[in-house]
Image 1 (cartoon, rainbow, N blue to C red):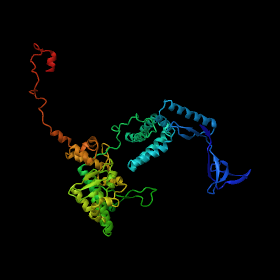
Image 2 (tube, helix red, strand yellow):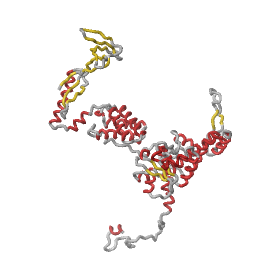
Image 3 (tube, rainbow, N blue to C red):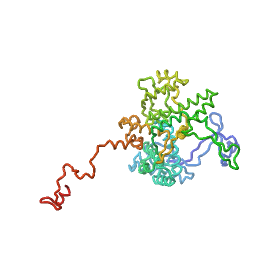
Image 4 (cartoon, helix red, strand yellow):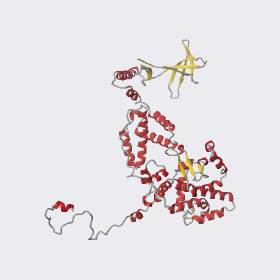
Length: 512
């Protein structure tokens, strides 16, 4: 066991003043923090000049519990403090040798002072190697960064369930939803589970932190579209690019400080004005056939994106990853091959396509410049998968585009019950339509690619669109409740007298 200050070398600073004293060269300089240094100068084997410095903190050289000599920084500037750290190392080693602590427990205790920031980096690298989606990894990094900063988690020893519960309570009082709070809890909980598996922690400090009740505090509840709303949405998506060019100008009363033309407003697109605005836009672009063709095709593509989501149940991220090599429209039953890397559950699936949707996809691809490439990629999809074009050009702001399409179709974004319609609501519509069509639950679960049928039946099926009244009407009828002649089989005949008969007790009459 030894306590000493290590020596290290570094290149001679450029602004250093070199001088000679007692036949030895020395250098004097001031660093960026204004601290003065004086060190010996020597010539390295490569011919460069370097300076020899001594560390400001003491290093402890000792044997660990496995008998290996290791050097550990005491982080102490005085010898007495470093010797105290040395004593703690000796006591811990003796406890392991005597059997009070195991080697595993000693290893875990040595990680207690490790910085969480470095471990989070290793954890995110683990998620990347485990093929988690980049968006999920980014959200985990964001949640862990906020928790570590707000709760003061700097070292592993700082992890405390009490701090996390207080933080969650403050966020709840500020109005944070239950699902968002559970997301933060899941991020730090999974991180600690990874630390336990890798020998950094002995137990997960957050295993007993309760989860919030999401059912009683749902902030973003989606609803399914009716058949009429789905048809209106497809129509609005098809015509709105042209209707945007045919919007009329409305004038409002100008204010005293408004600039010129500041009272000009474009009229909103409504279901009543949608077709008329599209006709005006088509007439305005009569002299520019190329732009007219592009806008018409843009509307067709947007409507086809919605229709594909409604009839396949694909998630928007999954649809955005599909390439022409993944689609087979020439088979007897057209299908889309969803790669495992692009699917949420990372299993890979075959998505069957209805005949009418397959026909429209073929017509749509026939007008694309890369349509001739489709047959080649389908013949040898593996070789051409990396360079195959995408099936749809889905914009990043599709949610905002859909909001405008909903307004043009006259579909409210949020209904009277507070349920919303967004891109993922089209998947809810797909699940609800399967239930309305009488598809068995197990088949609907396979079509939705769910691991739990409860998710298909309870979350992705909108009961408001089910014919519950018609189902009740199908029940067999019952006699009228006021029918005095109503009798039941197996009932004992009650005597006409008000008092119990011979051999018949009050309990028998009560049962009868």
